[in-house]
Length: 137
Ligand code: CMP
Image (cartoon, rainbow, N blue to C red; front, side, top):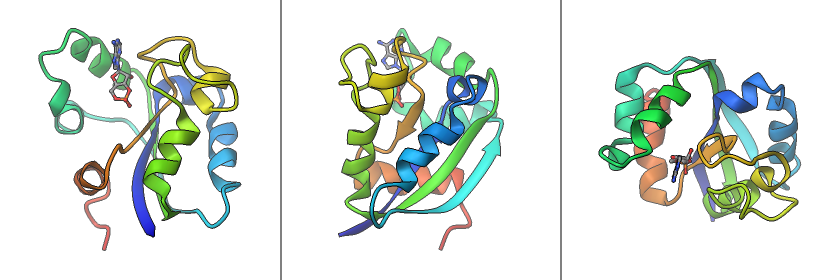
């Protein structure tokens, strides 16, 4: 089943020079295509709508500060079971719990600075793609 998902390479990935490394892993998955890609700084309004479900949690304010600390790379990735597949490629939220071989498992140590975001369901993907790429057909 071909799907579309939103991926954000977080400011730590950009600062550490890991954009190419992460995008390379996505590109090497058979049949997946990057159909949009943009380097951009996120304003408060975008972050509030993207992370609305986490508002009020103890990690929310530091998360928003981190996500505004530098540019991110926003990507639309399309292909076979890409929503589940991107989550698998990323590894669990906590990079220390993530297996080596996953992006977070190979490059991360800090829960907040966990390199990338990938939509967690079809509903989230539809909602998040509208926020970041409103012009998408
Ligand atoms: P992500 O799953 O992309 O979206 C929510 C983000 O909040 C998550 O990645 C982490 O960056 C951050 N996050 C989630 N849980 C915690 C936590 N316990 N402490 C700090 N940051 C967190």
